[in-house]
Image (cartoon, rainbow, N blue to C red; front, side, top):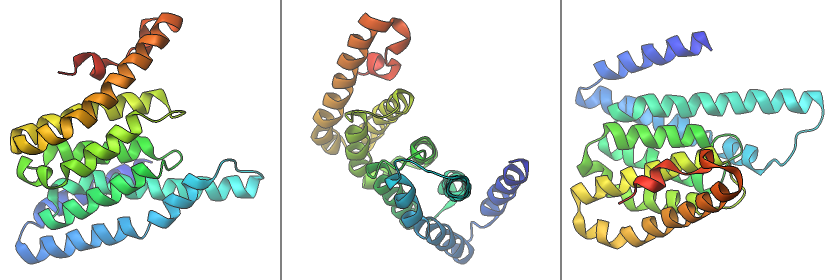
Length: 209
């Protein structure tokens, strides 16, 4: 982990220095290719319901670690990529989120968060509808970890705020989808609160609006 953390710092420093046209294009294409080459592996991991046997467990852990590493690369790299590649990277992340890839959701959401947090609104609005659709679907899903639902709801609110700042007509179009997802999660959180107490309430849902 320490080695990979250092590698991420070197990667970020390198990408910061590759901001001339040709270097930036080459670095962007390399990051996209790396992410796309791991989509099938992520899908395979997502399809697994159980892993039996020590060898299978070791293989799963190794493959899972590799995909997580690639997703962390995407998170670090996305602010420094060309606009065209940023959008393609986000669409790959959206595809993975729709696939409910086992054990990868937190890392996918972290990469989407980096995009929403550090990329210009003009670029975000080009792909915001895809993000809102994927996040709304996830927030409305059953049998997914509560902590990732809360993270997705928070990102959904951020995405709606970003699209409002960049394109009000798109915001008006997508608001019902996002609102209904968050409202549904709020109802679910309240029902759980009545049973289990205040720790189950969804903070982003309470702040929505």
